[in-house]
Every structure is written in C-alpha cells, then in structure tokens.
Length: 109
Image (tube, rainbow, N blue to C red; front, side):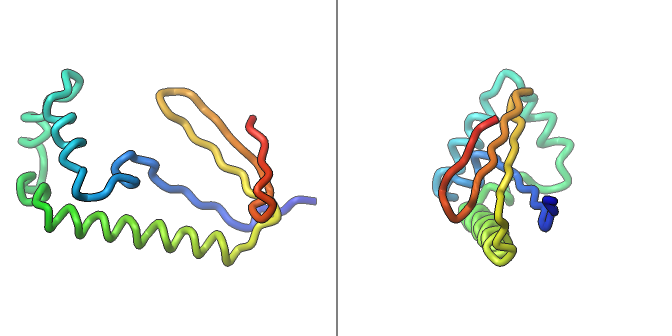
C-alpha cells in the first residue's frame, strides 16, 4: 500500500523565477494594470513601498527565495520518494502530474 511520506507546497509566482534585476517588469506591469488600484494598494501597505522596490532590497528578497527553493529541493531529494505527484491551479484551471523522480517518466492527468 502506498504511503505519503512528504508534503510540500510552494508559491509559483513568475517573480520566483525572474532575476531581481528584471523585477521592475512586474512592478511596471502592476502599476499600469487596469485590474489593480495601485495607489490604493500603496496607501494600504504597511511598508514604504519605494523602500521595498530598491535593487538592494529586491536582491535580498531574491536571495531569500532562491535559498528557500534550494531547501525545498534538498528536502525532496533527502526524502527520495518512489513516486512524485504535483498539482497546480492557475486561473481556475487545475493540472497534475505523477512520475518516478529518478526515471524521468511522468504522466499528466
């Protein structure tokens, strides 16, 4: 009988896979988005948003994200599961895959 030995959850924001030097693209997109009231979000923020958008601060945050991703990878590697299942929900659509992590084979559901 199968046994669940590890559960991991992680954000999959595009920002996590974007180098800090390019985060301005996300900032600019959010500032210009017709779907966001950026001035209202700025006003509601508990931070001085401009302090959070300096290159120094963005690099610090990027390093923290990459360190956390590396830790997740080591945790998964240490668990050495026989089967790996992942799922994601984006824009209301769900997808999942299962496979053997060491064989490289997988199936999509």
